[in-house]
Length: 439
Ligand code: PLP
Image 1 (spheres, rainbow, N blue to C red):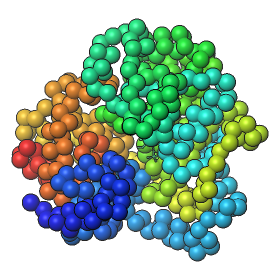
Image 2 (image 1 turned 45 degrees about the vertical axis):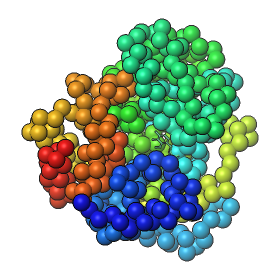
Image 3 (image 1 turned 30 degrees about the vertical axis):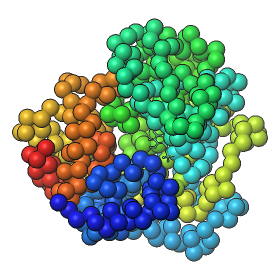
């Protein structure tokens, strides 16, 4: 067993001062104890007990260039020397916004904020103001941050029914707040639908379209099984929303800059009205953005919609994002091809190892992100089939991987960075082999 005694002690100490002992609720679930990091470099991270891990958590996604990436450090440090934040405008904002409008196909204009949650809040507000309508359609298994008006729990039991049904089920989805303390009224305007079901989407939008301000969707259901949209599904979403005067928001907080500089909507050839991006955009520094059509973004320009935030567009954030874009676009094809190839090699390797150990499982994969599940299903293609995975067994596997010196999220989602090399992939596959043998 790895010695994680110092992490254990620090977690106990932390709980005396930091509510829950962690800074984000999700982190307390880590077994055998939430690890305390001492350093990260490239694709590797060290804990306070001196254990080294190959990192596929990558800070829950932002570290697309790995830890402590030199060019990002230099860019941020140079910016900080000129002042950390001004509360005035500066050229970095113009440059970042300009570059975002160049690389994101749907972007006429951009608004900057600090987190994915905030970007989604702004996008929903813009949609309501633009349409003069109230309701928001969102989907089971998608996550759009933890603000009151969008945060719903991931119910399990009722999902199994919804998967079997057709359009009639659309109205039966039970909405459960994501947390205690969240007003149920805050979710009154949410219509919750199963994703990847064309009939349900068509029926719900046609029935409630007069009331619906926006449909918000992850372009790939990365938060629940890394499920790809069925052919034509997002196109149908685009056509229906256009026809019915509904704003289409693609939440690209995970896919933005990960599937390519143009995000999933660029890759899939879609033009949503708004996209939200975060995580990889700042390479680990807090920054997010809403990008979209001139007609909608004009509501910020003419003062109809307030967009606030003390630290929005600060120089640290913009310099980190600019450095990330510069690095990723140095040779766009090559960086993304490398990440994709490494991920494909890892995915194929793990699939073979599952066969070798006679463990039924599925890996859903796009670009440098994939979801590994132990399941008897032949396909995971919606939230209902995702819910049939053996989550407890996977959490046990994640624990064994930690023992083997590989840090993976206990829910099955893996991220790769541009600095994971052949060596890390080989070491990881050897670790997976041993971990599966011990399961
Ligand atoms: N949207 C998606 C698709 C996400 O995956 C997340 C976070 O995981 C968010 C929004 C919220 O982003 P943040 O944690 O930066 O607030």
